[in-house]
Image (cartoon, rainbow, N blue to C red; front, top):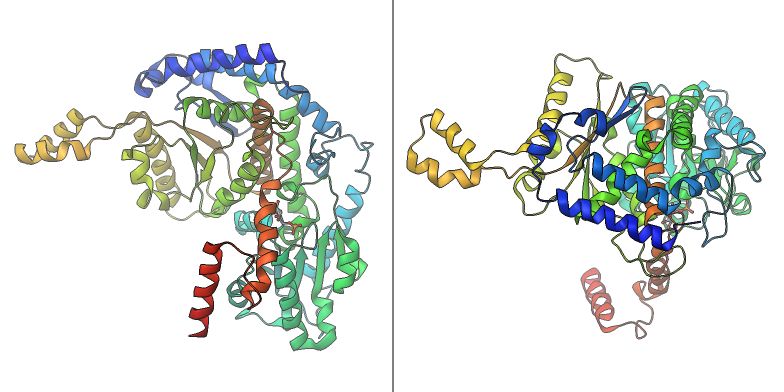
Length: 539
Ligand SMILES: O=P(O)(O)OC[C@H]1O[C@H](O)[C@H](O)[C@@H](O)[C@@H]1O
């Protein structure tokens, strides 16, 4: 697996040559080239990827396709779908596609997927319908999901994204070990009416277990031991769930071949099913499965995840280290946070699959907030700052809320931003505009440099018909597979996350000292902070 040295070196050289050729070419000129829409857009049904405002052209794209081919990414994709151990540092397959029916059912390890799905969807329906009731015989009105990382971000993102379809209990999320999180979520909730799902692949994560114990105490304070009937668990660690006091019939399992950040398609998705019901959850899976088919079958030049991956590789070749992800969709407000984990935990690596140091930059810094809000805060820097920050816009043609002309305004703003970033406004244009308003010439001269926009800032737009469960599933799977493509080209294993371990281990070591124990073994800086903390909390 992986590319062959010489072929890869030549393919990289071609890509960097194109990057050097295109870097000085203004987007104004590139976008005006004929045939750009044919060469730089692609679609899967209504889902459209517009790369016309990326600093790319057909020649650069062809070089990127050759690079992808030389890297062996298509063969690695097929190996993933076949259940081969593509997660080479943990010696296991990465079979999240099995959770939406996109791998052969006889693939080793996936036999239980459908049965577990049927169980957790039935449980969600029982809570929603009132067939499964609270200790006092009444219905559950609220659900709290306790989990962190992949056991939180997918569900919280999806539940917010699908708010238009929410017809079940209200679903809340607690992730942070900061007691403020649990306190703020439980304040105003009635423990007699609340179900708590403890979601943790390992069932050992400090934050989740701490919150789980406190939440169980909150339930028990209201209903005694019967409060335990309000608990459910999602984990691969069934013994630990039993030890925590959740009986088997309310424990929903998954498998070590699902990474946390790829797990919302299985039982980790229980809070989504609680909020919107099993039928919509199946639509979410169907949307992801449609993207899986496309990823597995479409030719590279028309394959959305491959194209998006190539753009990611291209941006690093151009020297741009960060990406702003800006959904023009309020309900996708947690999508950037979700993609942060998906992308940065997968691609934030400095060594290749072989363990050799990477020769090139790998995953970018991803960040973002929904538009139009972002326009009124950090877009200043995107337009006039000294760094080029590529933007990914996400936009639906149809709103879920038809309210006056809100949606037309949202759309106009999104299109305006990508055009403004690409084309800017020259100093001459700024001057002419001020002159047309009759401004004083000295004032025009003074302000022109401040009112000019350099432009030439790339972006892409992902457009779909409307945000529903199917479209959301498709969009998430698009980003999942894009990460896979980038990892394959850079030669990274995207399925491990050893980089989160060190801080966890140090936190365990520090806990006794924070509680007042011996701190002499720690470094001087840490001892200073421990002393200050002790002084401040005492005083
Ligand atoms: O589901 P859990 O085992 O509680 O893990 C929760 C999260 O914590 C880990 O440290 C990883 O960084 C994440 O990939 C994971 O999703």
